[in-house]
Length: 583
Image 1 (tube, rainbow, N blue to C red):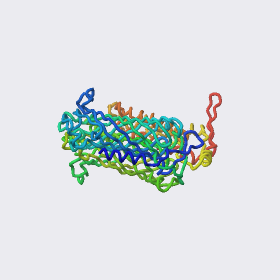
Image 2: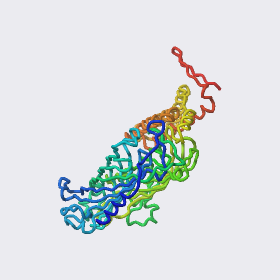
Image 3: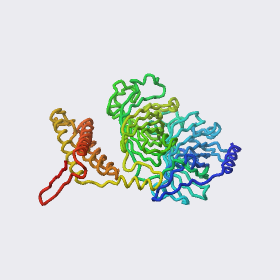
Image 4: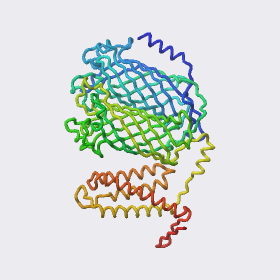
């Protein structure tokens, strides 16, 4: 082991390297993207881990939970703000450092046994976000850089021959020595499944809480690899508020619990749900996306068996199913291998997913790791359709298996996820080859707001929405959940709120996407409030939102067909308001 350590160290020192370097654009906080083989880096450090197993007093971590190890990492910065890093950790086996009182490394209270069997190893994947470059301006010669990251990965404990899924987060503080070398301090906390601690009793595994974890504190050196190569497809990055998007759609999940025959997933493991995402492309190739998924809470599968509680699976639906919150690191394969073309219709992207999943019926949360592929088709400058297919792995707690001891904790519990939905680009959504192209394009698309058109179309949209919802209420006569009257379907509040939000989006959303986010966010809150307070069923709210959006889209479309933009005017004189429309 000692010989291997010195060989790796000498190899690192022998590599020739240059610092990661981006060419700055004329506008503040913009740079030109480099080739895929530029801006890679290698890291090596010594670390100390502090174990924090469920049910033990962390105040006694010294010396019971202390161990030492080595880390080797390889990563790449796609832009000065974001990057990816893969990391390998081997703990409690280095010949230089040994703790003879490591009682909290499985097998518990057999100090030395874990080390004798090989310690433990871990593989991590980190999404790096450089805070200095994200909120400030990129400076190649900046000495100090602060970076945060979420983490997903797996570990394997040789002491008990068991592994588990893990999730965590950390922070890196690095100091630049020169264009090639940096020193860094890396601190993280990692949550792990019960397989890692190897306990055979539920009482010590933190059932459903994922409270087995450990701190990792590393100090080491970073070397920047390779030369910055000219990218024939280079484009300018945009400002922080550009290239955002939102996605929403329906999904079908196929549950795949450990020990079950997947050929019987229909209908035993099939659920339906909805998802909502918001993300940003930092370059044509790389982006990040935050995603919320809610399954088995709207559409019930009466033959479902593979979700908790196993003795009464229908209770899972009654308790609102399960949900996951995740972060996706996205790589646009089309732009990465073919080159960026703003007119391209079809795009294929791959993603790596990290997050947590919770079963509401058990009040539990578990790490979630997955990968998938997504296909999008651009309808116009703003709207796209998308479909995606992925597989996500979680711990036994995430699937709802309450016996989380050694017999099942290392099993591959997971689920397939199949999505279909729509995507909306917010604000400026293109990349440009140079400043000249950028200025020319922006000059052509500068919006001169027509307040007359906005006021007329908004008023007409609200009127149409009000008329449609009133007719439906009087015709359908759906009983409200609180039985106060028979005008539940559809929700008038939701319909009018989404009508107003859609008008705001159509007039101002292109130049300021946050107007759209605020408008639709407020409308969503109104709709949720109506359902939570028993004024409406959930489908009343969904129908109301659809009516409001559809009425507004129809009204604006009809207005554009009937009236020219410059032939609509509103005048105010004394107590009179006049409307003039040129046909």
